[in-house]
Length: 303
Image (cartoon, rainbow, N blue to C red; front, side):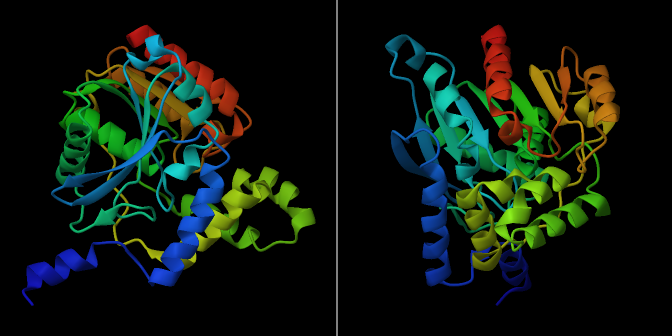
């Protein structure tokens, strides 16, 4: 086997077995059931693999013609994580939720996409395969890095970008990984302790049984094979001209909220930034109703 092939395979995520994959899919379906029902599912072929996409939409014919929303989830998860947001967003306009290749989900990865150029190419091919010429792109955590990277490298299809406590602004520090592992261990805590731990760790996953099962199953079922993304430099951020809305959790351990709330609007003309109290890394889950409203208001102002 050529060295390049071996190196590529090492960068490709995989399920540990068909049985664990099916077990994880069942857990995901229980989480999907908490949100809006999908109108359809679609596989989009790209140069890096097959991307699985869930489509949601409004019943109002007038709303169907509005610029659609594309949702990109965080690392170690899949598009089921958007269950608190799909009902409100899909009532207002078409919504597409993407399973990112390289994370547990129904997409199939064949080539790595963690390099910025490849990530942008994968998302461009996915949007083109869906026939979407103009979209409001929303990314959370690692999906926030993907959205930010897209705005920097291939912004032609983007009407706006919304970043929810995103990666790509600071180097991922030790405190974030400690928080991730602490949250994972807390999923094994007795049921009576979980609400207190959820509040202490800012981990809503602990008090939603379906979400807790999905996350725990993902850690057993799937092996992610990619490094943490490097943050964009000031110079790279200053190239962005896409309307941008940055939402930060006040207790975020991924980045420093006050620092980035000042930095991003200073570097990106017209960018908006807001810090949400009472949450850490999951504002779209902890404060779904308020975030859904503010995201839709931002998109309407762009449209």
